[in-house]
Image (tube, rainbow, N blue to C red; front, top):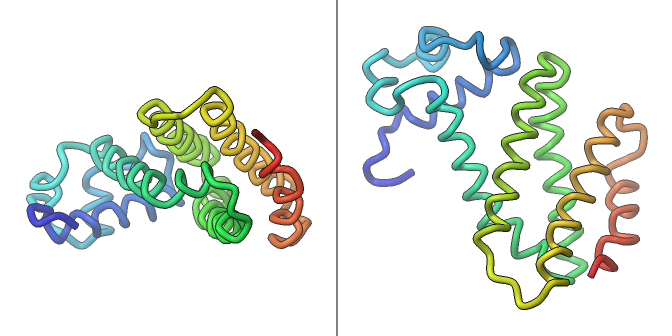
Amino acid sequence: MTEREHPAKREIAEAFKELLEEKTYTDITVTDVVKRAKVARASFYRNFSSTSDVMEYIKNNIYSDLNENVIPVVMSDDVRKWRAFLFRYIYFMEGNYRRFKEKKSVNASLILYTIAEVAGSIGKTMKFSDINEKYSTTARIGAVNSVILHWFDDGAKETPEEIVDYLMSFILDIK
């Protein structure tokens, strides 16, 4: 939280995410958010101009997290870092994508699009030493997303350990 960020900002964002489990994104109103967050309407408007602005705030937080924690791993060949990342990513996706998909598939698509948009924008700002580094990063992110989403859509029949082992069998070979 920055010095200027109002304490209610995070509460509003968390309430918005909870509401995404119950309603489609377009059906969430400012009234819904302030009731769920237990904040005054003035607190909402002190921090956000609309529900779209709340979604943008959530997207920016995803961007910061990806930029800080994910991209350095995706660009490395460190097996331990990759395994730790894959487990964290599975549990992140399980807590977000799966939850939204069960309730509102429109919201799951929105979350996935947001994550893909954020990952794509990070790649555009990065400096790569050569063509292999540039495209292997994209290929690795794409492979991880595709496999994990397919796994969830198929009912997550395998264990997270099996999925991580499967991804590790080829992910570092992408060069």
